[in-house]
Image (cartoon, rainbow, N blue to C red):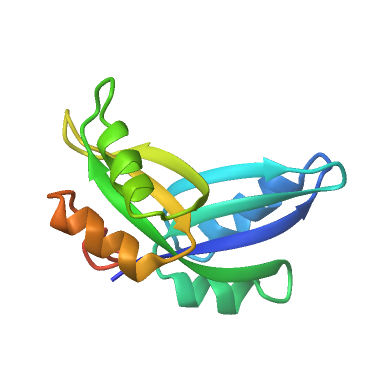
Length: 141
């Protein structure tokens, strides 16, 4: 039930991000959410995109690209909304490797994307706590 994220490894130099976003767009995908992490020599563009498998096929010769399953949880778009998600995962001893957030289409709608050590348990405890998790289908990916 998790959602699919792509990760593109980019050299840490001008033009790399433009090339990646242009390649995704030129292949007809919409970027729903994205995050960039950087090290000295390279960066990792993590993105939730429409038509993930198509994008991977089209970009694999141009970029080092991987696919990762992540958890996306719905939350309110106000102060403190992230805390119930974090506390629920902490109580279940779920480790969060990284995360990023994006807003939804409604006025009080936001989501957090989490890379965790145990996706199945994370989704189960979140759902049992009344926290909605998303799928590629529910995000219309």
